[in-house]
Image (cartoon, rainbow, N blue to C red; front, top):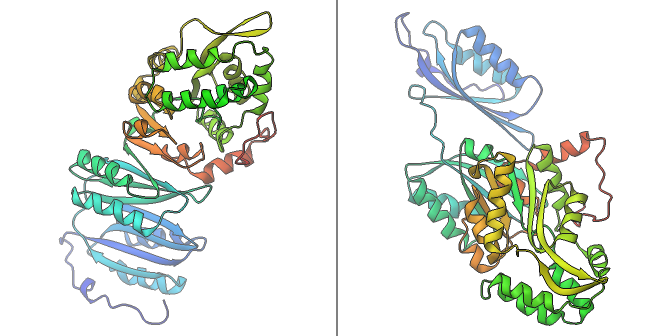
Length: 423
């Protein structure tokens, strides 16, 4: 701060012992160093000041601390604070504010996620909020990589309008915007149910199997139309499976060896387990592979379709009921009931039209690199290629994930399905 100290004339007026205490906002900023906050609190305590609110942020080694205090009439604490700032090379200034405000009313949690998040994206979000009378109360960076992620706590009288505006503007921006209600419901999520093909893994399993049957192009065309909602899923699945008739059953093991996890998948599941989540995968694919995935990743529940095998060959038929759009929703409900978890404490993630009922039934549905029909029908969409980015939408910081990995002596990234993200 140097030798020059701001004047304190406005605070030097004589105060009688009966005068009500003034409420002052104190702002401190400067290079961070051990003991700064402790020293400040000592000055306030010695002066008998009351404390009503405090916030502290550290950015690139620079400390920004704001504190609302009530100043006793018989002690000029401002002079003590200015002296403390001068002695410790930090700036201190003051502002008289109104009486301590009431607790803030929970609003929306807005998460911005992208390769880069620029002032333009922040400005677009802030503009929408302002148009609906909303305000950004706090901004926290959650991650620098593999994507940038910021969490904004917002408030305002028209949360529904703010949500609609944010969802609309998200379509015009190069980053994703996830919108969720602030409060216990968000913190209480306890079950995550995932689609498998093109969500947990990068592949469509039936297309890998079709390679060996020589009909991949035909299967891909049917898959694309089914995932886009143009074909009935059950009929399309039966038609595709029929093309696999005659393949030897060992194709399932060979296919499993070719599966690629979506980048960040292992990190995602591992972190959910540490947080105490129950996990499930429900798939329109095949039990043989889905169960192995669940075992390898430590997922609690796994459901898929069972291929009929006779004399060591695929017959081209499915045994039992098909896990279709309605089936996925029913399985979400069944798993939640089995675990004793209310639906509003569930999260569902998927990409295809057959995931829509599940996504809309869960307490929080996330369209992950999804088809247009899904993105248009679900409030929260993510289009980054990293599955663990979903953790940021849930409010988990990248630094906390890495710290947990470093503290876990059993943590090992090796295994039959290496995570392409390296995490």
